[in-house]
Image (cartoon, rainbow over all chains, first blue to last red; front, side, top):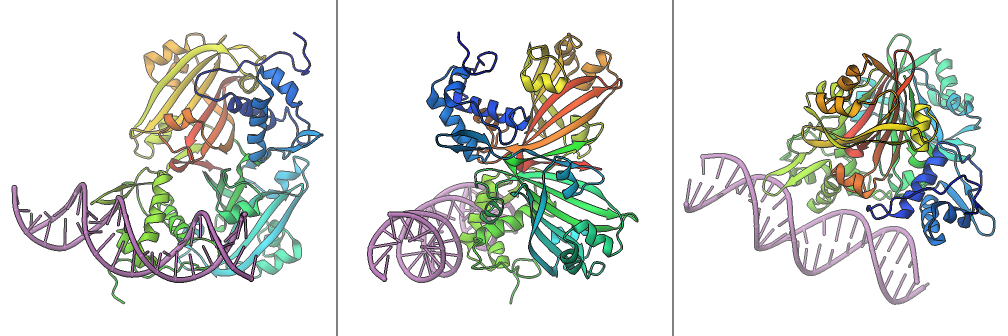
Length: 250
Length: 250
DNA sequence: GGGTATTTGTTCGTATGTATT
DNA sequence: TAATACATACGAACAAATACC
């Protein structure tokens, strides 16, 4: 057996157990991308090489690669090859979670685009998260978080308006929520709880995150408190499923 | 305005902004279910009442309810009403995470069904999780976790075979992983890391979890260590998206 | 068991806005 | 620009299952 693929051995797929071969191949490649054995920007083996590695027809490999492209994990360029598109970004959840810190640790250039800033009445869920009376006024910052130019998260940050009146201006001046809060006297804050759920995106969310609608979201709801224990922020962050994994360090 | 619905006021939906009315209604109801204002088992207002509350036609409400039913959140019974189907189970992640404890705290009767138990070679991801050489032998327990009879999770638990040779028998004798590990000399263990991702289920996963294929999974990968810090378990748990939320207490 | 009200299920018809061709 | 297809939304009527007296 000549090995043109560069990998050590043929991988065995389970045939005839109800899981299509292309799904198994896609899963294997997704694993490699998720675990960074295939780094972001790296070129996948050629279709011919992959076909040899999994001992299947090149058409089967193409079906698997098409699924990965649909999921936004790879980018296929005719005549050049297939490349790992987006790094699977780790979003670490802990007592002190900051978006920009999170990304800088992974050598990604963070960025944020403010979509909307407003003062309005809290919805029931928002009021509950901040322990306010239903209908209390809140400051809302809606933004899209970027990592290396690619949209990573679509987040809605809610603050009690009574306490954080000038937050929007402070944010516009500093360009950072942490800095804006510091301007308003919150030198430090920490995370109380995080709830992680999943669902399919609405049309607008898919558009903002530049993701296909068939790909699920990771939704993280979080409450932040100041040093006195008062609730200062209730945030909902929606992550493009294939591009982010939430890491909990115990 | 006579109020036949029993609710205080009409809720305003934003018309003509690109988000269909039925999606907004489904979202509002999903919020109430997720936040337990509509408790598990509770009956939703009648279609007529909801139509009045949102000031829409009954068809529009029906479309929203159909979406919730498709997502597995409610159960509709002709002549009786619509009921909140499954509690959104909190799956708490912390240093000491035990499946059964997790559920008992919420007054749910835990249960597990062993699907498969075997000793086999580790895949690359499994070997990496346990810090073993690729291809080392591992003990694998595959099970479905139940809460009040409803499947909640589909988990694959991997242990190094060299150290946990008699694990399968110990599990069969005790019916609990924690107890089986205790028999084999691991009195205590704790969680090192947890990675949370999301994706759509394979056919078999959807079947095991009795969920629609269009509904995404929450996938939690975790590594457990003993008191000496040695890796003793690598587990992948797949949760039915609409039925579980992962809670991280910082 | 019967009768009636309640609640969901189904099928017509009509109209509108959006996207595609 | 016109034609077409599709999703959305409203209105009315009746069928079927259930609950209650």
